[in-house]
Length: 149
Image 1 (cartoon, rainbow, N blue to C red):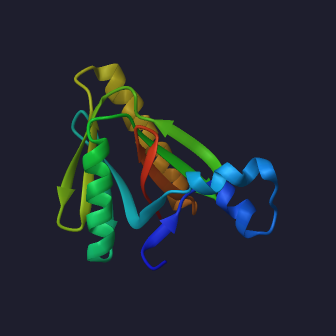
Image 2: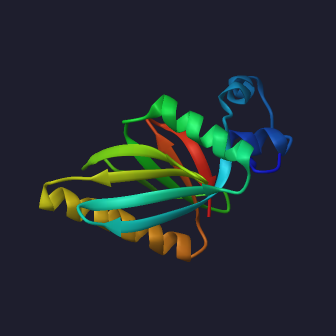
């Protein structure tokens, strides 16, 4: 699949040979999203999430996914060995997505100091788990848009 990664926990069950009739619908729920380098940075009044892709096809797919889902709830699901470790919903701020040369930049910010503190603590948790080896899947409105380290 190159720079495209399948992000759906149920996919692992299907590909490992475990299959029954109740899982038949899970195949249709598999979403292909670009595999990117995901970085999270603190900034004034919030955070910035950079999703950087390696090739033009992945960049175009990522930008299209973000364009369709723009101005919604941004969340990050961190996994280790395919198992969820942390799901961080950035509900305490206003989130926006902007295209960049190599992908997209998501910003989540708030004018409220307490909300900023919540957003910054989410960023610290994401950074710590990435440093420990977790992968990050970024979603907008519960729709995965990119996955990576």
